[in-house]
Image 1: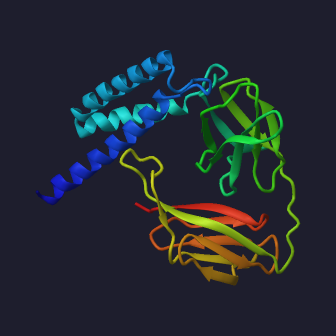
Image 2: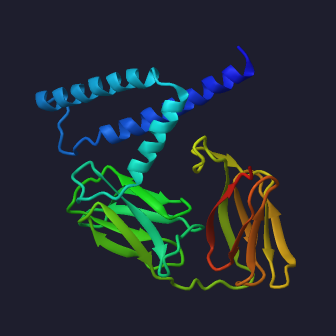
Image 3: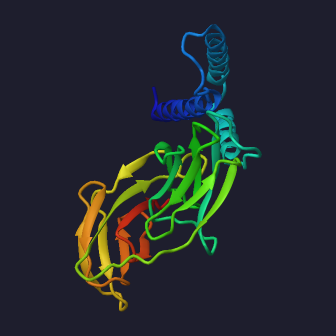
Length: 266
């Protein structure tokens, strides 16, 4: 088999696996009230399984170009606003932004469904460039949601809609010289459709540096795998993360924990 045929085969299978995974997640929002072994629930589950198998057989006959087109449409559909409040097992989506409408990119955004006594029952997060998030498998519309990120106030909302636009107010973090900041750095490649890569790569060899107002590096470290810790000399300096072949990340040093993604330069 030639290299071009091997690459085509691998690409088609990757798209196929991704597509069927998303399809099955969307197709199986099973209710928390379903009882394993009950005849009706078993029949409903078997019908969904049969439908999914039939759909997979149809997908297996598609060309790579058709899979590309279908995958792109599914990605777009998943990001569309959800018109009504979710039922048990449903999903919500939306964007997490700051008060100025900018996506909160380099913080770990935590999205959590909590029950009436405050216990976390479903959790998710947002790491996308535009602040997009999706939370699947809602346990109960009577629960509530909390949205939070380091350096921002936590916001609590009822589960009364399908799509949210969350704007979090900043809260200053009291950093001081000598404090240690930590974080994770992931290297991403664009997928075949030009969107964010579905798999992240370790950022071994990336340089994490603290840079002062004059552009001088005052402290730095080299990542051995994916995480880093760096003792800072002054809050307010700039954090710069760089790796050959990838975009450079810059952000003010104003929090203690960063979640960073570097995009591959095409």
